[in-house]
Length: 231
Image 1 (tube, rainbow, N blue to C red):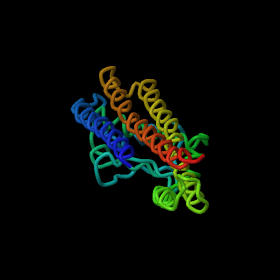
Image 2 (cartoon, rainbow, N blue to C red; image 1 turned 90 degrees about the vertical axis):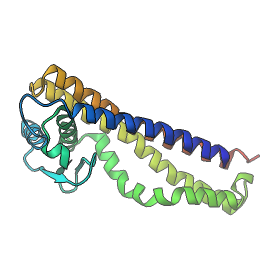
Image 3 (cartoon, rainbow, N blue to C red; image 1 turned 180 degrees about the horizontal axis):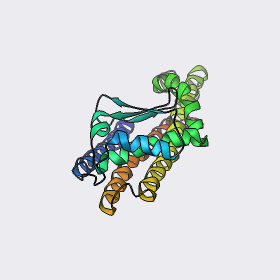
C-alpha cells in the first residue's frame, strides 16, 4: 500500500501544479479585453448560430471553471464570470463549450462513446477500489478463489473509469480545436487575443491528460497487486 500512496501523491502533486497553472493562465487572459466587446454569452450564441445550431440554450451556472455542455437538455452552461465577461479567457471557454455542442450536432463518435459510458461509470467508479482492496484482503494476491474474482470485478469497474478518461481526451482536444478554428476563421479575436485563448485551452486540456494518466497508473498498480502474487 505504501507504493500506492506514493503513486497517488505524485499524481495529486502533478494535478495540483497543472490546475494551479491553469488558474494563473485564466487570471492572466481574463485581463486581455476583447476588442469586439462581446461577452462570453454572445460569443457562444454566435458560434452556435454560425454552425446552424438553434436548439441549444446558453445559460449561466454558479461557480468558477464550472463551464460545461449538457447534451441531455442541450444547454451550454457558462460560469458567471465567463457568461458576463468580455475577455480572451471568456471567449476561449465559451467557444470550447460550444465546440461540444457542435460535436453533438454532428454526431461526433467519441462524444457518443463518452456519453454512453457516463451511466456505467457513475455506478462503478465509487465501488471499484473497495472491491479491489476487499478482494486482496480475501486473498486475491495469492490466487485464492472468491477474493480473486471480487478483485477482478473491481479491476474491471476501474477499467471503465480509465476508458472514460481516455475517451475524454479526443473529445476535449477536438472541442478546443473547433473553438480556436472558429475564433480565427471568423476574425472574432485579434492575434494577441487568439494567442491567449489558445494558451488557456491548452492548459485546460492538460488537466484531462493528467487525469487519464493517473487513472491508467492506478489501474496498472492494482492489476499488478492482483496478478503479480499469483504463481
